[in-house]
Each structure stands twice: as C-alpha cells, then as structure tokens.
Image 1 (spheres, helix red, strand yellow):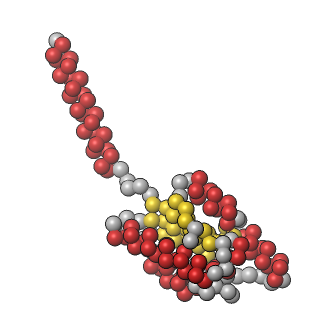
Image 2 (tube, one colour):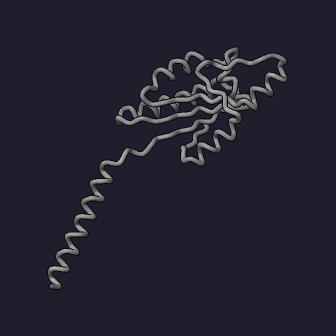
Image 3 (cartoon, helix red, strand yellow):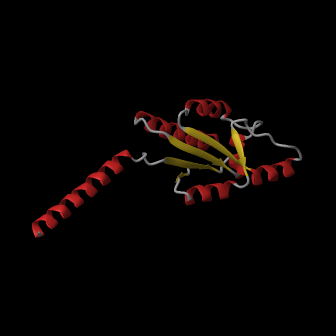
Length: 153
C-alpha cells in the first residue's frame, strides 16, 4: 500500500511539473515597453531620442517581437513636437510609419503647451503624430509605475 501511495505521489508531482512547464512555454512573451524623456530644446538630444527608439524597435523586430515606445516631451523639449519649431518633424512622421507592428507614441505636455501659449500670446499646434497629455512628468511617472523602462538621452 505504501508503494502504491509513493508511486501515485510521484506521478502527481510529475504531472504538476509537466503541466507547469507546458504552461510556461505557452505564455505570452513579456511586454517590452520603453518611455523616453525629452526635456531639452536641442536637436542633438531629439535625434538621439529618435535613434534610441529606432534601435529598440529594430532590435525587437529582429527577434520577432513587438515593443511599445512613448517619447514624452515637456518643458523646452516640447519644441520637438511643435508644428512650427520641430527640427525633427520628418523623422517623427517616418518613425511613426516605420514602427509597425510595434507602437510608438509622441506625448506632448499640455502644461508646457499652455505655458508657451500664454507667454507667446498665440495658440501652439503640435504635430499630427503627437498626443497631448495633461502633464509630461505625470505621464513619465505613471508609465514607470506600470513597469515601463525609462531612458533619458
């Protein structure tokens, strides 16, 4: 009777192990998510941020995986996404198209936008590829709280 009990226990452990291993194999791959901060009105920093995003997209594309990237601009970095002052407009448009099936978002801080509008005395338009978020800093914070990796070029 003891041998039978021992045998059944071993079979049960083996089944649990096999089921666990099979389940782990079939789980969805870990989500890759990167947030990039741009807070300087410097074309070199903006281009470096776009290079970082492109390189990450290329890396995961080569592995057959997707990545989500969010380039968050605020303060002087908002110039990256301003329709009238962005030195990287063409690169942003091209990268938005290039990223598929991965996703890239360009987040423009509304706090900064409103401050610039008040100071300059006229409405400010952002690029059509940009999404206005209430606060760039809050966006960065909340994405990091959700487990996104963070880079500041």
